[in-house]
Length: 368
Image 1 (tube, rainbow, N blue to C red):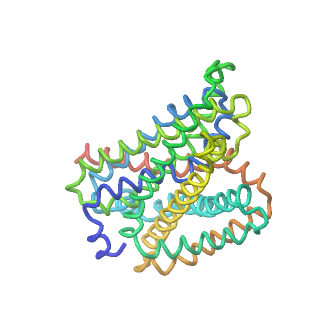
Image 2: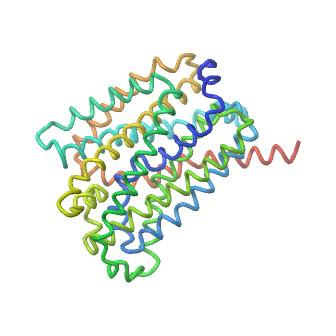
């Protein structure tokens, strides 16, 4: 990372916390509720609460390592604790998985556009356009998109709360029961899905913590835990609202929040609210892709000694585009299978180094 940019970004604790909130909800509010309800049924909101526990464990581990190495990123303190060969071994699955996530988020935006608004436009047009703008934004640096995220989060949070409130007339509370008709197993299955996305992505944020002044640790800690609570509340609220509005067919709603917004027709005056949701979904997923691309450039730059990480932003975006084309050629069903099954295993492998480094750091502290 460039020293000048790092200095400029120091003390922007609220902006960094805002980025963390966006990391949690950016694409999750598009992708989580429908499939999660398909897994867990009426107990889907319980699955979110269970998986949120892992989120708090991830945050606690990140903050512990940040407190010990406030000026170092995940790659840098991994080099210090276990050496470069092991660090490379740790980061190769991380890079691969997040290239898939980069292309997957762009694909999600494109699928949303072609499924709901512009059905005749080829999918690759949206993917190419999305990743091009993502790359241009990532090159501007963290200071720019972190400040943008604060405004975006306020907008998204406000719009989602407004939609959930306006849709309350559609709620049928009899759909809430029974909460666990098939026992605890579907809830645990749903929890494993929501653990893999978005909570397992928290490890990404380890690359951005060095941008916060170590004197701001207290504010950072409060901001991250508050963001985690609000993100969990928002995901749980959307999931519960989907159940209350659609009942037995809730698990079939692919873009559930958008579908909820389409049910709102108050006095023939308040209509077309889904436009606001469409904006929120696209903007959130877009900025999440910016964060992923920026972090990937930092990881690869620090791992292989590239002094100016900006030079690899566009090549990474191109790789993301090629990944998206490969996913499209396999079919959307294949991508859904990857997200719902393979991704759970891969994110677990990617997150193991966080706990290994936490244990090594704690052990070294004891022997010192």
